[in-house]
Image 1 (cartoon, rainbow, N blue to C red):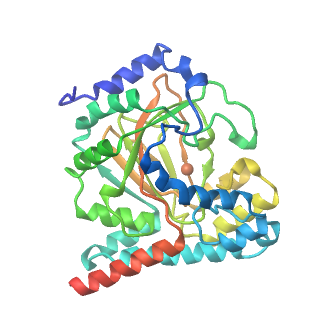
Image 2: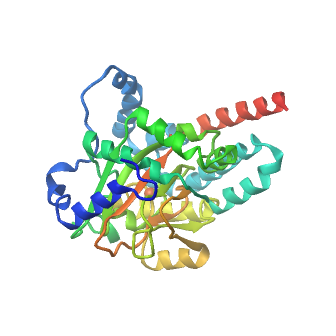
Length: 358
Ligand SMILES: [Fe+2]
């Protein structure tokens, strides 16, 4: 199936989309999450399910107290804490702890990593992207799509359905995730692991990345400039098409992750305004958005297929305008999100390991 110069399955998706074959199934097929048959390994998910359910039913004040450094506690839940520097302090602590990932890297690359940490993104170009082709078909045929947070609602703070909005995310099997990683490893060296760790805020590697095939068209809730959560999170976007300014490119406000004062003040404002359409991931709109764009450098990542952009999505980001008859097709990817304590333990152990081995 793999062709030396083409991603045939991407072309197939484009033409079936244009013919209306995919869009026609939108309402019935796409769910908020992936529900698969129960397998033994799913039992391993019980502790984290328990954790998130305890969180869900806890009163707001107790959420703020007990889940202060948890990655799932995106913004202060109580108005009492939203009036304080609670979010600013925990964001500053996360910035400090995340920066330790740089100290667990070799000296000769530290300068580069510091600039990745400050900007909040890292870009690479992949020449072996065409080898991914046969894996795309398998994902399309063997997984149920989800919208993965790219909802056709909530744009501009209004709970109104967006016309002609389409988003489907297809997951890959564990085995195929590792095959994708081995294809990427042909272009990415050890230094990539250090950049990835710098963005994730803890020491991790290429093999820890998982992927989903993302097909989106039109506008969705991800068009709004937003932070995913208060603490560092690494997400990646591997372009399977040439993407220009009208093709829904990934956009990022450079350096915004490090500005704990600004991000937390916007988060507090959203909580105090009871902006539930932010879903805890603070969104910037209107004049505030303009102010943020003036304050930081807006990076629009256009480029050819094979472009890989990794970003710390605790910094403000969005999907750029999609104004094309072709859907935007990318591999969306990332590593596990970790809370501040887990990051601290992982980074300290890696620093000790580096000291002992050098
Ligand atoms: Fe996001």
